[in-house]
Image (cartoon, rainbow, N blue to C red; front, side, top):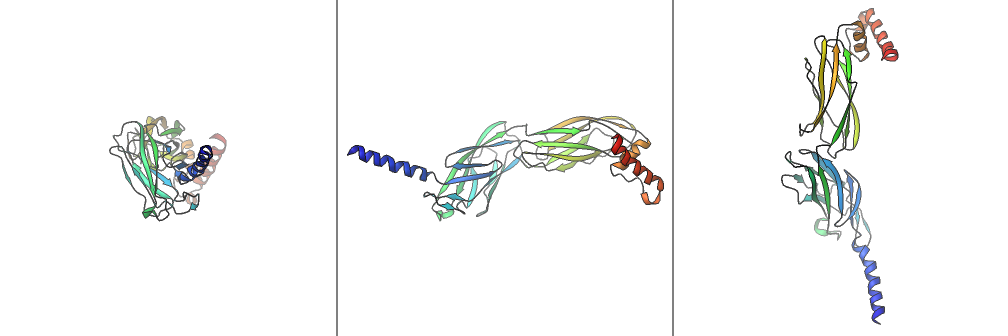
Length: 278
């Protein structure tokens, strides 16, 4: 008799246990995972001073396994390390989104924060769910490639550099591209390389006078200039017809082509240069 009751109790527990863990939190950014209450998720790397977003769906299941499309009404982050800041998602936003900012003076290492999703006033009888999110604060949040590393041009004529940023971190904060060490005003450019993406940007550089120059093409985080990488570029600027052709071929208008047949020839030769020589 006791054995039968024990077997029945075990059977009931085995049925109720999965139901008690039926509700979940579906994280969709910066990584994806379906998490039960008390679970842990690794979000990725972020640099000191940078911000990142955590996105999660509002849908879940209740204790009976029934799908509740608008189950979680708000997501927030708690138990933040000292100096970290955040703001709860707006009520009833779907997907829910919170922004977390790491202080510039944060030490490198792995940190835990708590993600807390709630069903406001428990209308859907879900209560709340809590998961642990791990964030790696690191200086190594992107890599850089610049081509070409040796360029030739004429004075005042821009030459394009192709800057590839591989954002391996979880922040979408902009990057700043700049050329340091050239005797001309080369305007810095802010670009957005989204997390976990590789993007290439065209950055033109030029000098005002003939000569041989060495400079650094630098890419850095706009929120923390200490997070930067540079590549060394050599540049030769000289007066020559070939350099004029190169510049016209890159879109530099030396004068209105329609008024001077010689520039029509230069434009034609620039296309030949791009196809045959470049």
